[in-house]
Image (tube, rainbow, N blue to C red; front, side, top):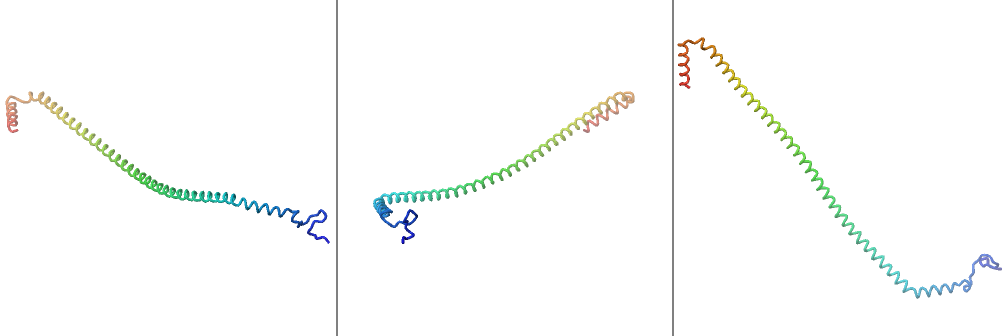
Length: 171
């Protein structure tokens, strides 16, 4: 009775004949390849492994350097931001001082203009007062000169002249 595992008449089954299946040939070829290529492939694989390790070490070094550079850049950024904030606050303080100074100068200029106007007004008032006094004195003199000769006689004129002379001597 044939075993069901074997293919007896063109069916599907398992062939255990080592020579027909070339299993021995495959084992020999693989063994020879392993024997001869062990050094060659081992060297290639070892060089590849060393290259990969070197690349990893280089990458780790670059990562450490990049981390250090990043930390330094962040410190520089923080310092720059602090400096910018200080400059901004100094600028605001300076602008406020300039604004206050401008206000004070404007107030002082307005006070000076007011003082000048007041001085001009006082000077003009004094000039007008003096002019009015002169005109009043001239008008009084003209009036006296026109009325006096008709009112004063010779004795009155002598008394007026004597009184004027005595006033001049007392002064």
